[in-house]
Image (cartoon, rainbow, N blue to C red; front, top):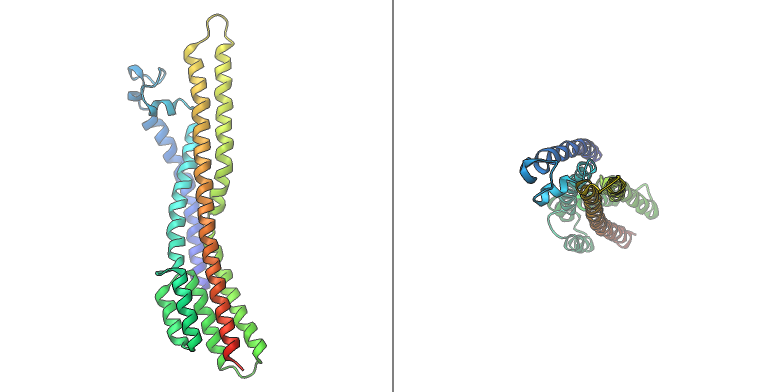
Length: 267
């Protein structure tokens, strides 16, 4: 089980290393060729006023592709986490699986319980299977007393849990980082936009209306993109954290049932 987790961890690390630069490249392409398409501006001139929302977003300036890349990173990693956590849960619901294992343990049917783990698959099933196999091994172990056997089972469960849980929270630190960075980048874009707006007002004679409008647009667009990206990142982070907590509770509940069953059925 450790080798599969190590290979899975390596894949997740490679995945994150690929997603981040890819998101940056795609974001630059979107900014230059989609948002910056001359058709989005009056008289097909990007220096003129935009005539649709794509052109308006393009007026946000150089911070826009950075914010788009952060948004793409959140979306991509969120999809990857959904697939991974969904697979970690297994085929049936956690409550149903834990209830089935508890029932089989009360009957002493360890072989069927292991078969149920193989059928369920996922992180919880891996931990439970490791515990049940240790349970079965301790039943035939005559050199240890009951307390040491129970401790050995608990140790096996703890080790299996330690191997599985890090895989569930993998890459969540990226989402949490984006939640903070997106707001700051949006604020930076807002400041840059307001500097341009005030620079347009400070000109001698009549203010440059186009420069003033561009500066204000840049400020507001970056604020909106930054806040929106940050909000999405926070929502997804909390969603995945709640899912992981539910899986962790299922693992703890199943582990407790295994230890209690062994204690009750062993003299």
